[in-house]
Image (tube, rainbow, N blue to C red; front, side):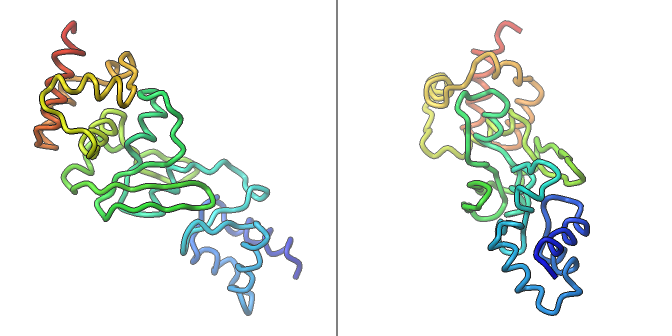
Length: 220
């Protein structure tokens, strides 16, 4: 059977763009040496191996766009897209972030894949879940932090930042991170700030909350 027939069969069998090795084996169950078929398909670029057990279709065979947020959750978990990637997409920071950044309850890891660079920063279980949204696209759900959660995660995990008082946050936010003040003000809500203050239970976040309320929400 020709290569074109094989990939067409797989494309008809698998509806989504992201799929597992098990799904691939099910689609190739009529072949005597399915692993050899997979090797040939990856070599030709018909399918792309993201990591062991995880694949996407090559560009020519894709029916839909691939969302890196979905892949991020699948590469390493439990994880949630957060930090700079979310802040950039939300317009909180001006830089376009190429690395898909996430927080995880596992060890901090980095994965360089054919579809991008994925980084994962360890955070405690208590601080992991609050502020997570479940998004869904083409039948695949993924977890992503709301912008305020992403900023709190960034402040909490940034080892370069050692605040000495609430006033320290002005330089850090607006000079170091280049946060857009107007965009930041839009996501600041007193109840959510207090919520994260209790969840993270640290002076670093407590001082951020004090700074935000005093300097950024004083007119409300």
